[in-house]
Length: 86
Image (cartoon, rainbow, N blue to C red; front, side, top):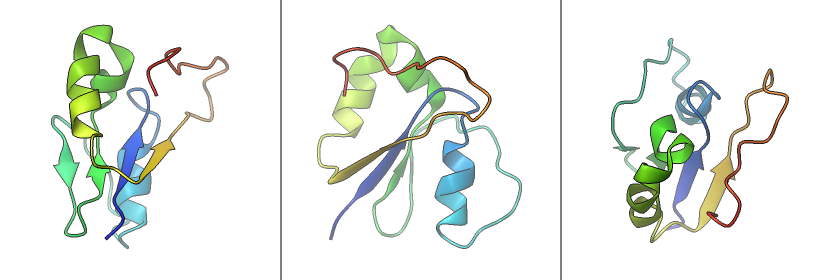
């Protein structure tokens, strides 16, 4: 089974997209830890992506992922994608 992971900065909309793709349209709450759905898809906390000290946790979490989706906030004018991380 193919696994998908969502990464991006805090407030980019990762959890909202993650939930919507599962048919859950309720208000998203702040993701405090890595969350998995029943298919093994992964929603990551924005802190894992935004702070270099958490890169090791992000890389470990993404080890067996088939598809990585980078969620970029619509109101963010600059790219926050860390060079060489993904």
